[in-house]
Image 1 (cartoon, rainbow, N blue to C red):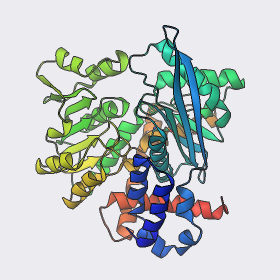
Image 2: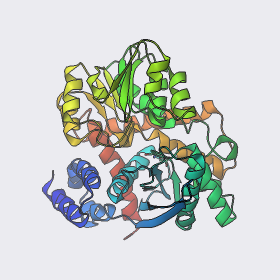
Image 3: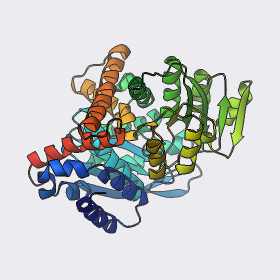
Image 4: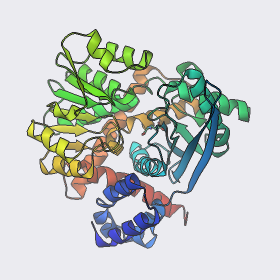
Length: 445
Ligand code: GLU
């Protein structure tokens, strides 16, 4: 890392103790940014990096609610409003027991660059709670969401901060959150949340957008090597919204997706995953992947172990942060890997990324490859602002154009900085320059 940046990075780490994932995200971005500061001394003079690493505002709050047996439960809520240089804070809410400030800050920090890459007018933010929706009834989830919004509503708004979903927050949760926001404010403010239901202000393609977008990005990346998804053997991790839609899109482009996973194990289906069955089990029944193997012949279910033991030419980590480590990366490379596309946020450890890059594997970092979700959220905001709703085809075309645009920006930036094919460098510099320019133009903010 550039010595000037390393000194700033060390101060950030010392100032934010115990936030390992935030430290990782900051370090990974700083490693790319040395050459930009040679060309743009004004970024150092204006202390852009120091400012960028300090969120504009951080909100931590109590979320009290009662469970179905009448017992009082207390969770912690977070919203980190990281950077509004390019637009209102934008980013999802994550409900998962692992959520603490370090996770929210790593996600919010990544979101700044991701959102900048989309070219849409959105700043970066993230939030969530350590609430675990697993095993909770609809009524419990509703009471939790209502309590969460009873504090959050005062901090958000269509021109201020626009939350959406992430792990543990889908259409059901957005519905409860939106209903409570409307009730407290007495405003039908469609643009305050994205990921809404289609009959009440949502956008077609938003549910599919992250997974679809990841595959569209990887298709562009494969083209640079004269290849495509057609005929590839793909392994996906996860089986939630991002993973399911990545499976669907990869198979629509001619790939065979042979494996996916959940937190208990993974399935291997050599015939290619049956997307309708997967959706039925995960989305409709909110069930476990094990059920998939019980309902379809020729499927192996492996409890424990790692889905990355399955050989693939394309790997799409779509589960969660740091799920793919250096050892798994080395195994995938030995087994003939061609490309990796991160559908999740920071799923590969820094060691894994180094293994892929050293082996000449095409590697698309999450802040570029999974930007289709938030980009389509920005399209939802556009439709809300004009009280319009677009067709599936039109919206998907807009998503495709945005993903191809992000790919080309990353590839061109990597070329320009003398590292062709380095999408990590391209994404970090491409996103950073837009934000840094806007911050300097807006004065000392
Ligand atoms: N949580 C998603 C992400 O990581 C989507 C955020 C949004 O749509 O605002 O980008």
